[in-house]
Image 1 (tube, rainbow over the protein chains, first blue to last red):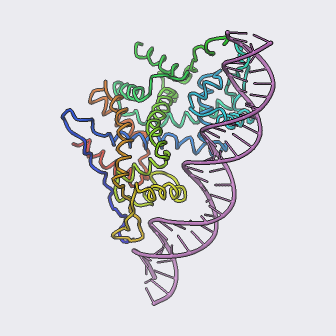
Image 2 (image 1 turned 60 degrees about the vertical axis):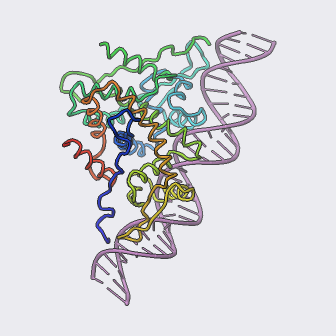
Length: 181
Length: 181
DNA sequence: AATTTAGGACAGCCATATTGACATATCTTT
DNA sequence: AAAGATATGTCAATATGGCTGTCCTAAATT
């Protein structure tokens, strides 16, 4: 090459909006990009494993929430994933056919198909969550208890709290209890 | 309905691996899910705006990094986005055709097509980054300086540091300087 | 009995990703 | 100068995971 790598050293644009006065807050390019890279690598680990199973990210999301919230119905799952019934249909059918998930008619409302992870499904979720937990634990290392609490508060603050779906509601409820505990 | 919402209150599986002994770390379901929801909403804001432009998330990612790292070449962009040349091709062509990005032959290596955002491109990136910054600032409110620093450290720790692409390298370099400053 | 709801299924479309092959211009190496 | 490697672009074919719209059944609500 003409140059080892050109541009040899990339430089980011400097932040123009910054100031200590009452102007609009400076763009947080740092956090925006850290979030991008963090999430990219966070979902990258599971992606590799899923490939071996012939599954994609969509299957992971479904398996995860079904395992975590046993008895979740289809409507609630759709709201969490923010996709349509038709999109979920294909993925869910695969997971049912291959024995990762089972359905059970609702007790109170027998139209509902409540979803449960099988042992096979649990094993897959555990494997993927293990990888992600490893990464999280690594990232939390070096932070004290108050630092870890700040991380939780930050992530919680990034989430829209108005009109939460059922799953998010459960999380927010649990989090409220945690703070008091 | 038989019941207002069934299950009326979802409950998450309780964490089985938890303990204070030297066992493998308990799965961090909390952080895993907070990250999912936080990222879902974080990219949700831009998505709505992009729709009006007839663009998708792919266009956002390209525009963002081209604006932020002016003179980025195609190869480096591919590494950041972790997609193939062919996938980038269509998106990039659209952005070029519609005047959001311009190309310039590299100075040292004239095979390279260095990418730059136009004023039109800058405006779009600024708009989207503004939305995301609002969310970030909101989430950081309530955290003190050490809390905000913990968040940065956590996100940084979530990222794979081995074999970084050019853009990530620039970020890591900048971050190192920040810590000293 | 009529209507609504939960869920499933079909058809077709679109965006974004993939691989593989190949072309061109330019840089590096011999 | 010739050969090889590299940066980028492009063509063709394919897969995944979204979408809309329509229609259907079973079971709930009114």
